[in-house]
Amino acid sequence: MNQTYVYRKHLRAPFKYLLLLEAIIFMGIALALVGLILTDKVKMKGHGYLIIGIILLVVFLLISIEMGIVYLLLIRHFKAINVTLTEDTIVYTNSKGQILIPYEDIEKLEFPSIKYTGGWVKIIYKGGNIRLTVVLEHIGEFISELKEKLKERQMDHVYNEKKMFSFFKTAVFSDESWERLYHNGKVQIATHFLCILFTTVILLFVDYPGNNQTYIMGSVFAPLLGYLISEVIIGIRVKKRVVNAELKLLPRDPKFEYRIFHIFIIGFSILYQLLLLMILMI
Image 1 (cartoon, one colour):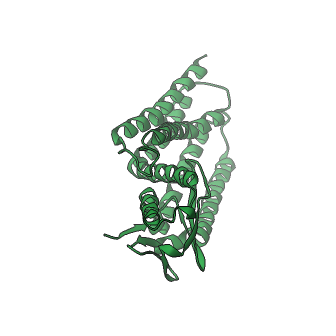
Image 2: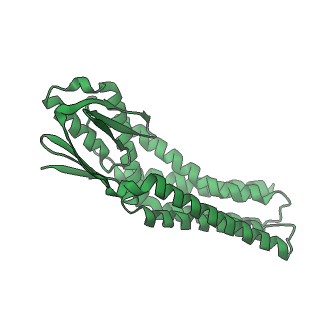
Image 3: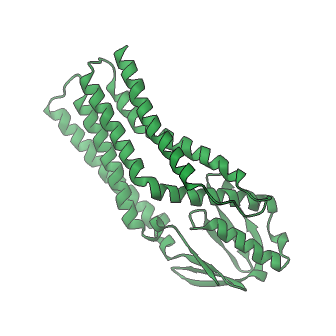
């Protein structure tokens, strides 16, 4: 049975998800600004709050413009792309039409990528080339299946085994990372907002003459640091799941990943609040 691969849902419906991302960013900035205003020891006058409001509006407009540019120049075309591996050909479809690439016409596979970060596979064939990024859903499976198709035709010479294997691990990690982000997104956003909120409450109830801006900004980045460390720990396990250096992996452990995510993103947020209390009470 032919398998068709598409880009992840935030690229298939990019405008919707860009608006959602903009709303989340704007709410986070607004919450941080409210925290700065409430904890300001030298109370601002009316024109000070007006300036804050104008800054917030300008930030919103700049984010909107940036999102619009990103959508028009980089993202819009992904929603029309899909690729199918049939018995004899790669069928690549985009907004301009459809390209049929017989496996025998493939001259080279290239894998420009940064390990466990991102990249793409470039399929060079007679007459042109196509590129598929690591945001293609189940791209690890795509690479594994493509390799089998080429091996059946004794076309191992069109790719470098080591580079393909390295890209495969990056592709799998990226694919699984997006799945985790979809699954844990609500908890992650709530944790960021609550960390800012609790920091604001602590600063309101503790009389501290220092620079509260630093502490508010710290509350923005503490959960993010926890999330990044959890991804590094999970990423290390990808290498251990490889079976005999083939393009196949042992099954994931979603419960372990979910536990690590919660331990670090929530743990770092709580740890930040405790450290803040210690600093303010000294």
